[in-house]
Length: 158
Ligand code: IDP
Ligand code: MG
Image (tube, helix red, strand yellow):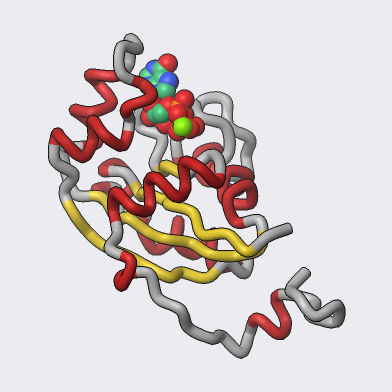
């Protein structure tokens, strides 16, 4: 499994409901490293670029309206297999269907107000990180705790 960086967005409902700390803690508790973070309000154009794949779908206009309605916390999260790990921590798209124990399953019941976005592939992670962060805003820093988060006996973190 490769070391990956993925884009997570704490959506307007997460910020407004005061859930930022508890949601970030889910990722940190898993051993993932926060390498970038920014509180911002997403504009129409950025929302359209981020959700370009969904243009034309019935929920698209509502999604853009929601995502631009209030500030979000954009977070870059790094770890071995981080993209899939984060998707697993988030749970299924709809809060009404997401398993208990996941972020969406524990904190939400709405289908559209589902608290978090997470990149779904290495390609979308690269594309989305570039939309929201300058290269210099993604930090490289050592964490001593990674000696205990990962088994390094093979020479690379596992
Ligand atoms: P994902 O966020 O789990 O990857 P996507 O299918 O990529 O789910 O959809 C993007 C976002 O659009 C969802 O997180 C949700 O906020 C919203 N959405 C998706 N499908 C629906 C729907 O059928 N009704 C309302 N909102 C939806
Ligand atoms: Mg998606």
